[in-house]
Length: 398
Image 1 (cartoon, rainbow, N blue to C red):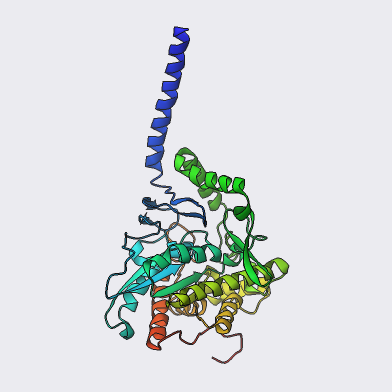
Image 2 (cartoon, helix red, strand yellow):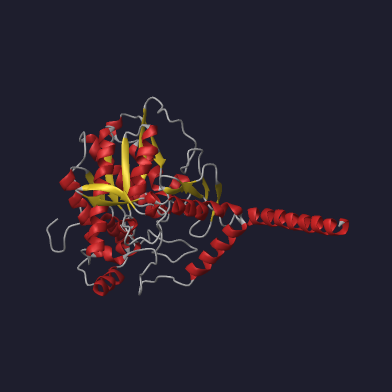
């Protein structure tokens, strides 16, 4: 019995020591594969407070999450006197782990908007509430539960049409660990297993929180990197796996019609929530890489492949929504396309990824941030939302 006990204790000690060594090694390795997320009972997932690390899979930056769970330094919720605060909501384009914090477009907005005459020299703070993978429902919840506590004077909703419409549809979106809404009797109501099933929510909790065990996190990220390397878009075939190309034409079926209706309803509600707190609201539609390709040839080939006259259908649709509902919209794709053409510049892509695809690089953030700051300054100078400018339809006068 004593020998058996000794062997058992030795085995247990060996297993424990092995696990400790493995975790120590993984903790070091995870510097190359940082994981910033944790389960959130309202939004499905969120950024985990206090996490920091180097992101090198696309671009490269040291990313730190503050104590309240969003990217950037710790800030007091009480707004300092003489300060104008901007809350920027969105998905991975806003979180922007690919570039250093000071080069993200919310910070570019803050620096440029500080020179706006309407602000009279007041200090401008931009708070980055972006979270990778979010749809409009999660961004609306973030506004209500996080951003409003910081008393923003301006709310910017960054709408990435490449997948936001799908993200808001329980029929089209594969990732169900998130809140979904549908229209019933003319009102948006919460639906889906994340809303109705406790066991499903527990599964979601396990899905996000197990990643902090180290070994599984590393293996999962390594597999994702290997998988991503097998599908690289090019100018001849500009298909990015994370995007939906149905967005460039009117919705082809009932599922997409419902997805658009829900998305538009959520955007309008976000504008209403901001207005109720007397915050200036701007909806900004972001671009995809092919929309702003610096040469016309690849764009035109892609348009012919899709059977469309141009790639601005979703941008015009959101601009029309703003005109109907009375909020300002800045459609970024067309001015970014003009900049890319004039300067023969790629606004997407990095030295370690295909140029022209993926997220904005530092130049993309800089140009977009300046355009957004100019729009906000015009709105402030006018005392309210400025007149919307959307991409013109083919052949229309400008």
